[in-house]
Image (cartoon, rainbow, N blue to C red; front, side):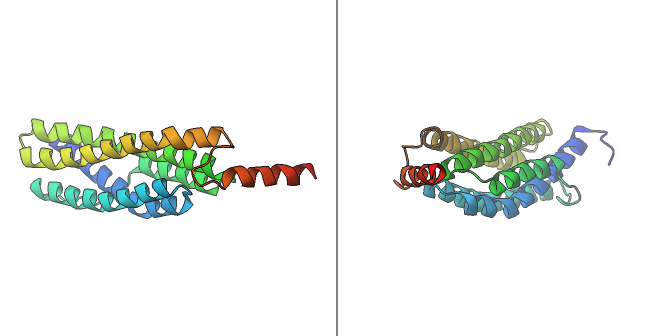
Length: 184
């Protein structure tokens, strides 16, 4: 598609976000399954529900512009998800893996925040206030998710750094057992 107007750019960006969100619908359950922290797992599950809503909102916004949201593959999200899949495969201590999952998830959130911020602004400039409001709602949710991940990281990153701290009480025992086995 030729980008000859701001509306053309908006449509391309909406299609990119639609692809990104649909890719996340498949990736988030895998991240939730890989998380050991109950709070992180719960956060991923909550965001999965939100992501379903983001897809629906993007469909509504596309209807307002009388275009299909389909037809583009978001290569950036594909790469971010691939990096997240690499984290899932890592052989790591549970808290370290959770810290890495948070980092991967925040990269995704920052990508989405940038994308939604742009399309919201384009919709405003094009005078489509309803589309701008719908996009702002998603932008707010993405920002809230990023803040929640940051707050969670404040605990999980400390647990990952200090093997004697654990929210479930099992990590220090596991690590001590591994050290004893390694010495034997």
